[in-house]
Image (cartoon, rainbow, N blue to C red; front, side, top):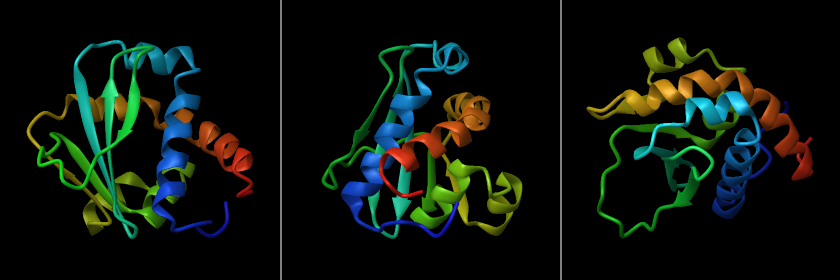
Length: 137
């Protein structure tokens, strides 16, 4: 993994959309996402891209949230794009990132975060594939 390849909001969204799409090809991820009705906000800064992951098994999807949408996702993860890219590649220690504030977790319902935690090991593999498909590696 090299430097962050882009700061274009459309590219940041497309990366995350493809990452989730790729993750849903893994049976263990589908099992982790088997509960219906969970949502998780992923707020990317620098550039500002607000995403909502709807967790519903094979029907799970990532949507880009309109800036005028006043709903505050619970829970939500906030991080810069450079941190997000490194996080998905597995090169950032999550505990250190939380302690230094480079990744912020907010909200009352932490259940969707536990689902995300269970798929992080698969994310690195998927991230490499998606980065290659986008011509970033």
